[in-house]
Length: 358
Image 1 (spheres, rainbow, N blue to C red):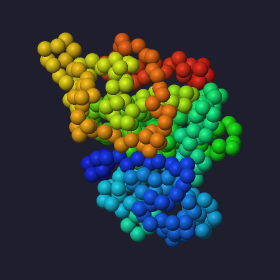
Image 2: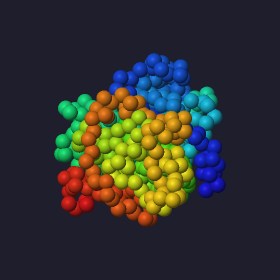
Image 3: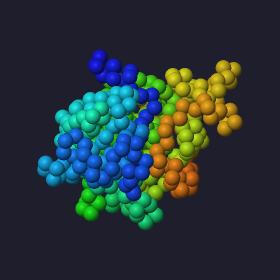
Image 4: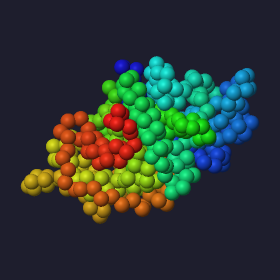
């Protein structure tokens, strides 16, 4: 517990998001990696799979076994190294699970390449974001959505069994094992922002705009239930091809949520570390907290969570049209928005999951 607290206290304050690339390239590679580079003693780089603030993920060939693997190469910056240590701590906990049975990427340890920490993973086929983007209307039929959501629910259940919050569930962090196999199988990847539920602190900034729960944006207490919020949003996007809550920053998304689902009660907002960044308090009013207008919300005061590349580049993001009721009932315990999120997508999910899974 003490070791974990030290890691968390020294971890970077700004999330380092990972983006799988549909068109792999080393053009923006800051690590000096090129095709043919050797990592460690016997991993030959063949292609770039994706990149993020941490560094790059490369497809490599183990020259000793001739097996293809995925290697996450972290930059040697002190903050990135600290985050890599925390990720290794999380991955060590996940080793207690059967990666195939749990629908979680298999981690095969780490090694050092000079001052860089390299994590070894099984090589998977394609991220779910690119998989749905390649399909007609950029969405999937229920016959495919059902097994995907069933497997993701299974993955979250297994994470919960070892007390881990993924904290960044989105299509870009879900991999199709083999797009040519049927039925489809997916695995959850990227535990760079994951954390033990017991170590979560209100105000921790995690997740990706459009997928993270309002509790995170407002700095409210949260737990592994925030992953269920993200799963509900992924479910809608898989079936419709559109994000449920589009926006370029946290303010836009939070405004969309409040306009469609209603504002959380004052006693909930009172506990938010970042409530005053989005709301104005007037103690003389019956409803003390009022959401700021666009003019009142100064861009420089935004505690924006980094926007992933796929969201900013998705032209369909602005075409969503929600018609939820404004009058809602909020839960007084746990995550105040969670039960509401599940309620709003429940009619959709009833068509996705078989009756015995509900």
